[in-house]
Length: 575
Image (cartoon, rainbow, N blue to C red; front, side, top):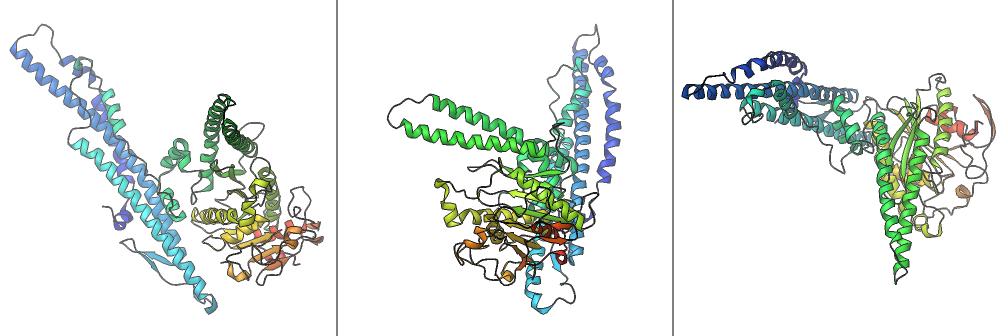
């Protein structure tokens, strides 16, 4: 059993240093292979004495082969343990850094103690601050548990290897031809069995803090192995760094394409085998429907390739991250960032609405958000590097469509509620993946604003929210009547409603998506009309789809989004 007090003393140096010593002894032993082959038999000597001598020599050779395997196993184990401990130390130090910044301490037994909120917290904010500090305490406790889990796994794996070494059971050295002894082969065999496993991730349903704590306590080598060998465990795991998720998801594109093509070929074969017998038309329709869904998913993967890969080189674009890739359900789902969500000071997450899909719409949304990002970087004075702001186009849910067979979602609002849970975890995961706390803005258009609003009722990590073209931001069975009910700091909710936007204007008040945002108390109403701002003349928006169109022409609505995303609400132009 490894305690937090033990972990506070852990240092990879002793085990790492031992590898060199073990390797030196191993090389000396391997050099004796020729001598062992020489003494394993003497030409012309026979009889009882020769047989006894040969038996003894065989024992010595077998013992030397076992020793070679033991040294091979030990040097591998000590190397792996040293490497794994670097992950534990990183997870420990990151955790202590977060605790100190938030004014918490971690006791020697691993318990979390809150040293109190910032001095001068206004009384009216006391309840909200207390709830936030309880969330932080829970996150810290989750991270402690994951670091301990990793340490215990290292301890168990390392001890298992050493137990085999100490009991002389690393390999079975008997039964081989000692006249052909090559100790390096036995050393290689021991090296193989001396490796440590990589700690499995937390189970399904784990919090983003548990995911973040698990990943932070892995060594860089272990992280790379998982991303390469088991990308499905990494790519869609909220709480992990964007760079790791993107690497894993890019590796998954090819695997997903192969799997879908195989499934399509199987369905096509079943379809070809059907006759015109009774009931076969219904089966034919079902099979064709499944093939159509697979075709949509394959088209989605093609779209992902176009968004993520440089068309000239075929290599991943350095300015983009593939933060999620999900081929489950009826339609493909993905999230693409422009910029680096792990390092940007300001991060925006945009959720689109009805009829949106990966294959046709997501590339346009990515371009729209790239344009908003450019404006936001300019507002923070970082037009040169563009590193200060990252924008995510998140289509991690299946919004309803206007197809006649898909109206239930529009009527019930169920996709918004299901998507909101995923969106809240995704946004909270961006925060959890970093030791610092980026300024995070949620942006939602149309049905995506409803999804965004519902997500804000959960634990989400969002600092500001911008709604545009919104039919409402809450489910009809639990309506929001005031911006202060959005689980945001007071005054940090914003709305844009363009002239002629039938969705924002014509959807009945108090309907299935709650009251209108355009006249909701506690929500700042921003302009969509033509104006002149710090970046020059700005055009007005009209209708439902002209808030951010990625055409290189600055609109007032885009400026206002950029002002909020960049942390400069004072630059926003009110309605």
